[in-house]
Image (cartoon, rainbow, N blue to C red):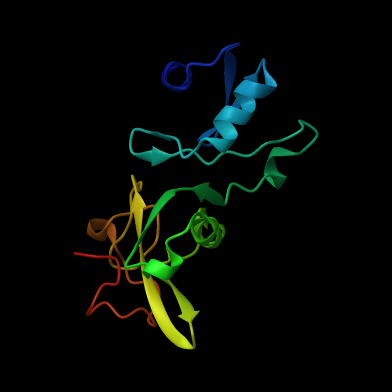
Length: 158
């Protein structure tokens, strides 16, 4: 298994295919489990792994795989806000992304009564549509879903 080699776990992991692109990972160490869950994002073959911690008491149909963690870069951050505290605040706004919603291209902030826009860049995105801002397809496979999205000036870059 490729992920087992990437993770380099101390105690190992066993995986089981549950069908419909769902895998179950059983870790033999809490430290290994925490490492995989909290040191994400993880990707395989240009697809993000959407990880959920479960107890085993859930029904598979009730487990929602709807959020993925991404590394995010903030651009044009005012010098006053280039602090560790503010970086942590920004992370709470964007790191775990709902895969059913548009990616945020930035976040608005107010400094001393003045509105400022901080641009965001995502690292190692899986298939992403620069036309509509959704994960799961590329601009090549884009079909306009939302008439409210202005395509004349894409907000996600060139």
